[in-house]
Image (tube, rainbow, N blue to C red; front, side, top):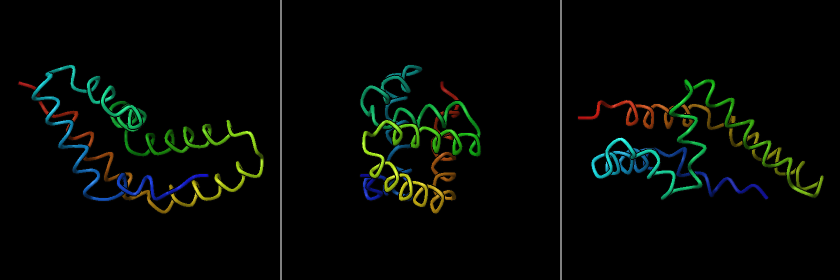
Amino acid sequence: MFDPSKYYFLVSDSGGDQIAAELRRLREKHGDDFLNRFKKDFPDLTIIIDLCANYDDETAFSEFKKYVFDQIENLESVWERMLIAQTAHKFIDQNKPALFALHGKIRAEIDKPRF
């Protein structure tokens, strides 16, 4: 079942700050390959990084919702799909401003000039 508590760090200030700090650390250590390294080290966050790197906040939000609901549709039980979809939809919509803030932090870190 969709458990929003697993995703609270994404919508918290400290979660976004931790992701940005890790991106910064990896850029310093690995140079231009820092995004690939981040995805390798944190595979569960690959979708978030890809969406932030390739889309504006509104499009990334929309694509994230599609991704979550595509994952839900792959569940076997129709009842489980219904329950999880309802919880996920509410969680995502209620946290739209926080997800936009997360996008901004990640995108700012990705777009920083590399020297």
